[in-house]
Amino acid sequence: MNVLVVGGGGREHAIVWKLSQSPKVDKIYCAPGNAGIALDAECVNLKAEDVEGLCAFAKDYQIDLAVIGPEVPLAMGIVDEMEAAGIRTFGPNKKCSQLEASKAFTKHFLEKHDIPTARYKEFTDKQELLDAVGIFGYPMVLKADGLAAGKGVVIAETEEDAKKAIEEMMGDRVFGNAGDKVVVEEFLTGVEASMLCFVDENTIAPMESAQDYKRIFDEDKGPNTGGMGTYSPSLVFDDALQEQIREQILEPTLKGFQADDLDFKGVLFIGLMISKDGPKVIEFNNRFGDPEAQSVLARLDSDIVDIFMAVTENKLADAEIKWSDKKAVCVVLASGGYPGSYEKGKEITGLEKVDEDVIVFHAGTANEHICDANSCRSAVVTSSGRVLGVTAMGDTHDQAREKAFDNVKRISFEGMQYRNDIGLIRSDLI
Image (tube, rainbow, N blue to C red; front, side, top):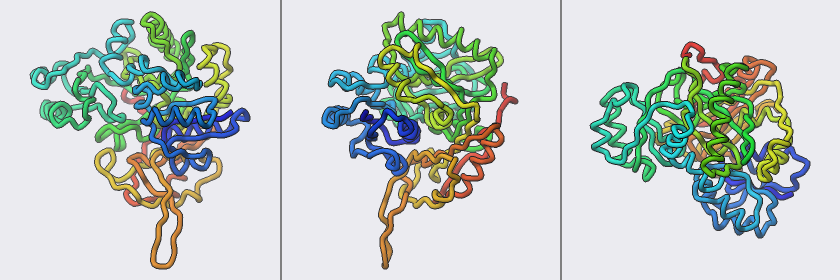
């Protein structure tokens, strides 16, 4: 079968890498892809947001299955358009994609179906929000309602920080239209964890757990990012907690989808806060998390094509989903200055020195010709804020962590930054 993966980041590289292991796949295309994805798929010069172009490509190249990676084309309705063109597509439709495209939509859904989450209030008027500063105390959580590339959340420690964030969101519009509405939430304490679930209209099947690290610096300091690393399974999960999540979150979510006529088919990412009061939902996303996908899919032993097909056919309950007992740690290497401004085009060296059993998922890379006075050569260069995800496996978390960081040190590019505490449990926060 011919498969088209839409997107060009680390999540899409992980999907392509897993698809390449399936004997059912003859050809993989990826639009637009990146330098790492090009090793496993044919990259197509189409942007992920070019819905019309992607649908035309899928028809022309007889695509049997399209897998949509990023949130923006999902919110634009690419699944609806692909299916209208007769292309089997893995991902939620436009209606369901509101669960990520609007923070307020998700908070309404959680409240309506009695799913544990933080208290909240939404605002569309800047002055009204300024007058309500500190409504739930401090730190104050402010979320741009719309899509903001994973960076639309500000945790303001003081009144001054909160007012500055409000001015940036609703005055300076640093997140564009995403900041037209702002959701203010109660600050939750505990350990943040992620749960990815395969979902069809009848079944919600949790994948192995993962723990994400959102802040840019060690010890969860500095501004939020799209994610600086993950490990799987999360050390905060045990059988009792997983059962609690199933009863209080997963089952009510599936029943809520059915009650609200949300025919969700794809991956539901559930961001969780594991607190003293139990698990609470921080956010819903409509796709594989990034970089959660890099550590979770590394542990998937089943053929991912079978799972994708089962979801599209509403036969997820019949799918066999097996996981490796090995542990995985993914360390993100980011550009200097990220998540603020950063330079692109920095040559990456040392990729050939990485151990064969360590996977380097490319998140923001490109192939470029570098010339001097005597010759030209091909090089892999940085093209985004998050550049690489170095993923290692081990029999224990410590083994996986040691192997990941040992290989991180073999890679280099100007300005490279990463967290040193990926894989360390923050049980002190519970």
